[in-house]
Length: 627
Image 1: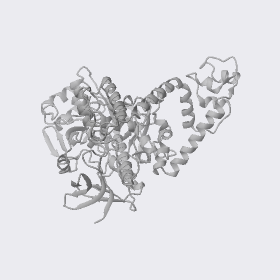
Image 2 (image 1 turned 30 degrees about the vertical axis):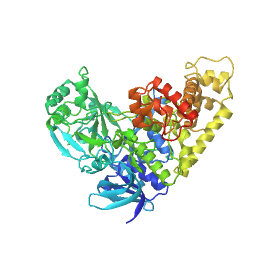
Image 3 (image 1 turned 90 degrees about the horizontal axis):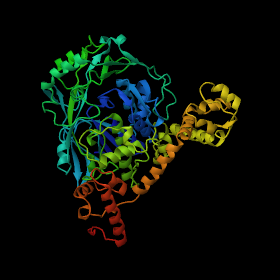
Image 4 (image 1 turned 135 degrees about the vertical axis):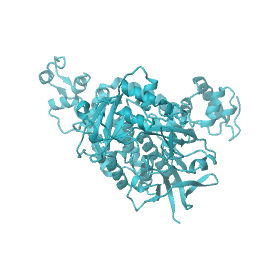
């Protein structure tokens, strides 16, 4: 029997990134999935990116991941969100051709030299002396590996709900995974239940688009991947419509048969992506809710009704959706449903995503209580990188909150108590001015290159961009723009100047762009991405300087490591809650400890004093003094 370096369970977005990166890092890899043809299937909405999520995809790409490359080939409606706001909160998003996305993902994983794809259901893990050594298939076959990455999504003991009917399934048409949760619970893991939902899909030929708001794609779509030069494929429109009071009245008629309201669903759903019945119950004062109609592909007849996620009975779904403007004659192709599944609270993980109870076992994706393709992919990438590094006896790869949204994501997961699915937002990142979607390559690509996972095409493009940014800063900013040319060009748009001024000084005016000034100076040839980076640095210099100062303070606090021998339970000066949380989560640094819910600033002060005293005393391992 062949023994692999890494075994990955699950062919969703986390599994794809984990399998690709371990193969790229030259480890023999097995990806085990129920159905090869469903690798990369978009089980929920047919879209990648969005607010904060777009930043994650750009970071994944800068670190050698593949989600950005896949959506660049499968995207049918690219849109940069928040363009009317500052660059810190702008995010790319793209609708995908659902079947094309899966085909491209499967093509990416076609790497017979390093990656075997095995169809089967994993029913258990081989755990020997506290270490993961392989997996057990439902048929009884053992597959051995030096590390295991579990990316089971919503499949662990999954149950689908439609009204009062329920079915054991991980998603529509697929069996749930049985046995894994029980194996993990038997090895000391705590588990919980969460739920997520999906809306009905309707036939596109049954929709009256003429009475809806058309949403056009960007005229010049911006790729997600740094190795993509341009988006070539045809772009199509999405549409917006709204529910109304009649819709809400019909939906309320189904509340007595709602699995959520009757208590059939025990798992907690995502607060920030509620079902339509939850929305009309919680926001009873609103007489309408926005719905986005998202086509699932060029030739796919299904349209995803974003905003109408529901688990109400079939007859209620059908009656309610036909009260929506433009959907009066719509034909439902697939009903909406809720799926309830097991997850494992992520405080049981190290920052590498290796589990604390079992060595060489990694969790990534919805098993950690997250929601969203992008969050899952980011975790799969980091779990794969760290599994490979550990097997090669190399230092772990951990991103700080100050370095990446991925760092924020993982830090939040392992340090906070999660009672609902976690979703990434720009507001979660303290340094979002510095962690923009447009500079992910400048922040992370050198790290990816050092790991050996960034391809030459992307790296050469990155080097060219860096050189252009350096040239703009050193050669162009001090050039003076003629008073006459500036006043003529900006007549009526900017206050006239009375003498020649440098490019840098003029750029401090909100209405002035670096692109226009370079045009006036006849300095062409710079790429827009380099121009925008330099312009942002000048216009937001004061804010950036303040965030940089805060970041330096953060890094200093973060670098103060807590000796692993310290017994938090015996530090009596800490609050009872702090002792409990610190003992449970075992933070590596003072900064990490400060972000644990329930640990107060006074607890951090106690810890600071204790660590200093501990180090001076030189206390031997396992015999921490008490306070």
